[in-house]
Image 1 (cartoon, protein in one colour):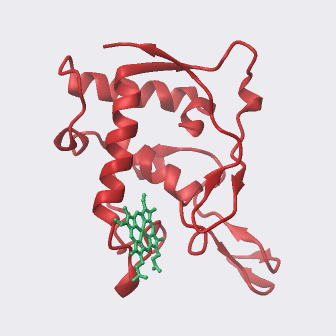
Image 2 (cartoon, helix red, strand yellow):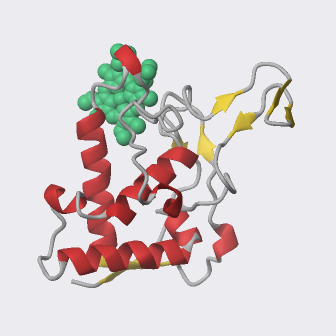
Image 3 (cartoon, rainbow, N blue to C red):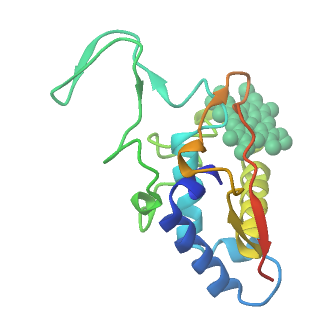
Length: 174
Ligand code: HEM
């Protein structure tokens, strides 16, 4: 949600897609989510930039090395992709990359025999909650808040938490 507030074009696109597909049904259901390629891409892009479990991705280089002609210092966190720090869901649209452990560039649930066993319930919960918030409400920052006040700071821990809560004004649309 924080990224969508920071990138209003992505917010507009994802809400348009949701409202066009779900129409006036009043609630986004799990089966609707499969018909929402841009929304799916938003989830992947958020998981690429801010994985919920910090130890796996992003990775940190353990020693100085050279990669594709670039010198990478030790202890550098690496985000991949074109304009890697930018929130750009389009990078996943029309691509077969998913989060289920077979595409190693995106493994927010891990991969292999220790892959998260809660992957399906975890993903469905995040998707249903976010989809309904975006479908049913428009979101604005409180009057005194500016775009540059939005921050991505996280608190370290077993899972990542936002350091500063995101407080927004919800405007009902259904
Ligand atoms: C969006 C939500 C979630 C994310 C991003 C997530 C992510 C992860 C990651 C990255 C791992 C480490 C995998 C590895 O070591 O390769 C993991 C492990 C695990 N997760 Fe999740 N998880 C989520 C939700 C859940 C839920 C809802 C449950 C339980 C209902 C769950 C249960 C577990 C368990 C038991 C492990 C340890 C598996 C093992 O070490 O064999 N997770 N999760």
